[in-house]
Length: 490
Ligand code: SF4
Image (cartoon, rainbow, N blue to C red; front, side, top):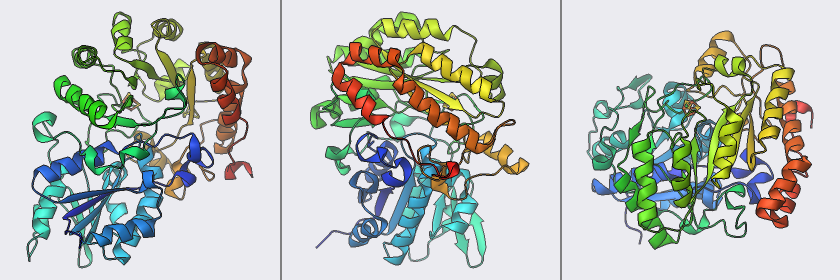
C-alpha cells in the first residue's frame, strides 16, 4: 500500500506540440530545477513530497493524473516553468490538460504555479480546472496552503499569493515577500525525487562528444534579472527587476553532489545572467577548479558583461559554451526593445571568447517592433559574420509577463489564440507583426534564415574543423527538413 503523500509537484510538457519533429532527438530534456527546489523546501518543512516529471517521462495527462491520484495527495500542484522564461506560456496548454485530468481523477486539491500563472493569475483561475493559482515564487504559499489543507476548516486568507474561488467570487491574497537569503531558506534541490536517467543535454552542448548527452543537470546560482528588456518575462514571478544570489560555496556543493551521486558532466547554469557579478561567478569558477571537477558547462552572458581577463579561468572550470543574447544587429531596433547594451564591438568580443576556447551560442531575434526586412537581413548577416558555433533564431513574441504583452494588449495586436502557439517551433506558432511586416513575413524570414545559416559552407567548414565530420553531418541532417507552419499555409 502506498504511503499518503502531502503534495505531488508536476512538471508539465508536451515535446511533440512544442518542438514538432525536433522533440524526439534534438531538443534537450532538462530537469525542472525549480520543482526540485520547491520539493526540497517542502520536505525540509516536514511534508511528504513526490514529483512527477511528465515532460521527461513523456506521459499523457491521464497517466500523469492516475499516478498522482494513486499517491492520494492532499494537493497536486502543476509547476509551469520550463527551460527558459518563454517556455512557461507555451506549456500552459498541456499544463491545463493535466489540471483537468487531476481534477477528474480526484488527485487531491489542484493548484497551478509558475511564471505564466504569476503573470496572469486571475485569467488562469478562470480558465483552468484548478482550485488554486499561486502567484509569486511559491515556496511560502505552498507551505502555508498545505498547513491549512490539513485543518478541518482551512483559512485560505492566510496563504500568500493565493487566488481561489469563494462561492461565486474570486479572491486573492497579496504575494509572499521575495525570499531574502536564498541559502538559508532553500535547501539543495531534491534531485533524488527526479528521474535523473532521463535527462539529456542539447545536441550543440555536446558537440565535443555528441554520443554522450546524458547524464545532464541544470542548476541555478541566482534568481531574477536586474534588467528589464521589453520582450522578456523573466521577472514575472518576482514582480520587479532584481537579482538574488546563492552563495558560491553552496552552488559548488550542489555541483559536487551532482557529479558524485549522478555522474553529471553536462551541466547548464540556468541563471538568465550568470556572467554578471564577478565576485559571484568567479568564486564558483574557482570552486569548480579547486575541486578538480570534469564538467562541460553552458551558461548565459550578455555582450556587455563578459570580461576578457576572466575567460581563461572560466574555460578551465569547464565553461565550454556561453550563450550571448545579441538579439539584433541594428542599434535602433535593439534600443526600441529596451535592451540597453553598452555599445561595444560584438565581433571583437566574440573572437576573444572563441580564442579562449569557449564556444558561443548566439541568440538573435527577428520581428522586434522596429524590424523591417532590411534590418532582419542585417541581423542575419551579423550572425553569419560572427559564425558562432551554434545559433538560436527566435521570432519576437509578446509573452505574458513582458512589457511587450501589455503593449500588445493595449494596442489590440493579434496574439496566438492557444498558449502552445507561443512556442517558437510549434506548427501554429504566431509571432508578433512589426510596424512594417506581418507575422507571416517574420516567421518566413526566420525559417529561411535558419536554413541559410546552417547551409553556409563557411559555417560547416568551421564545424568540421572544430568538432569533426560526425557533427557536421548531424547538423546537415538537423537542417534537412523545414518546420511546418500553419501561418505559411503548410
Ligand atoms: S537581460 Fe533582458 S532578456 Fe536577458 S534575462 Fe534580463 S530582462 Fe530578460
